[in-house]
Image (tube, rainbow, N blue to C red; front, side, top):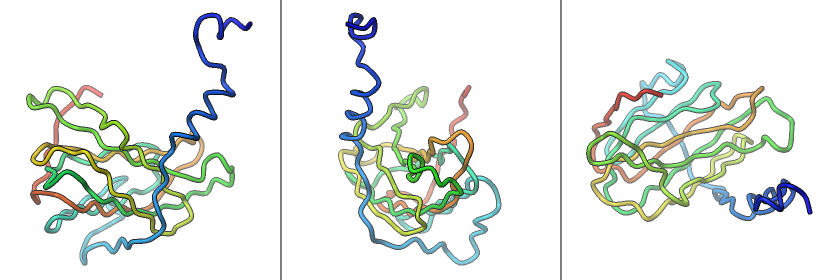
Length: 172
């Protein structure tokens, strides 16, 4: 019995299998067409809201978050695409997750089950994340696990209840 097993930790091989079983991959389909006039190369992360949709362009990132938006209903549909220069089979997806802002705006909480994997083949993929509370504020986090390479792409987040985004200062 190894030290990790004796202490109650799962060995690396078993945890990899468990992680893979929990991955939710977005389905092929949808479309991300940025609004006319949106400068998608302005910075590492560019957002623009039109109606109930937030458009997000990300350029050479590993991890970035949007400002907070208000959920109109109990779900949002996120369509996205990206590319990477990595050829390593372990780095051919990027992740999108939601975080909920507390009422006092002091903390954020991960929305359980909201991490969705999107392939980095430049094709549009879409997924509807459910279980949100209408009227609450959420942010989208885009992440990529490689420490050497980056992703560039875009998202369309549908289901916003307001065109107003909220920035919250943090000590991150």
